[in-house]
Length: 117
Image 1 (cartoon, one colour):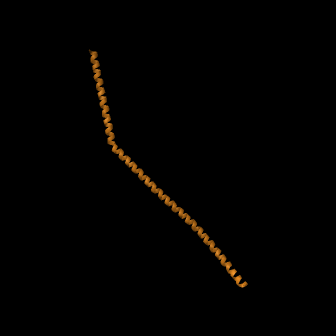
Image 2: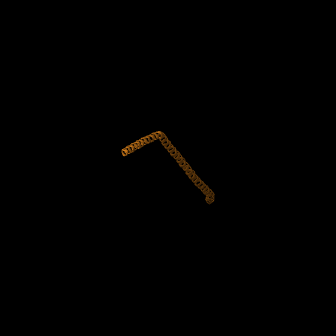
Image 3: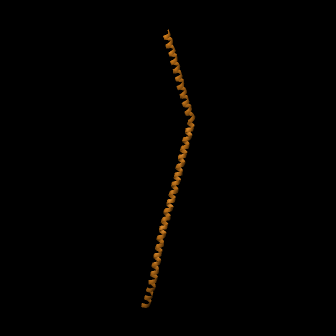
């Protein structure tokens, strides 16, 4: 009789433990769902903000790249114009020298033609 009562008592204890464990697991699952539902808007907001930040950084990078390209093109044009300008100046100087030489010789040649003729 005592043995049967002991088994009955253990059975009730085990059922109680099982009920408490089931209640705890159910409550834990509910808390996890509520927590996820509760933080999901924050997660979504953070993800949108991150995407916006990435888009802004990409835009800033594109603008900086375009500015550098324009600056490089302007520097190249300045160098080319400077190079062309200095070459043109040298060519003009050489032409002027040649003209002076020709004028000087031409004058002598003209005199030779006039005296010789």
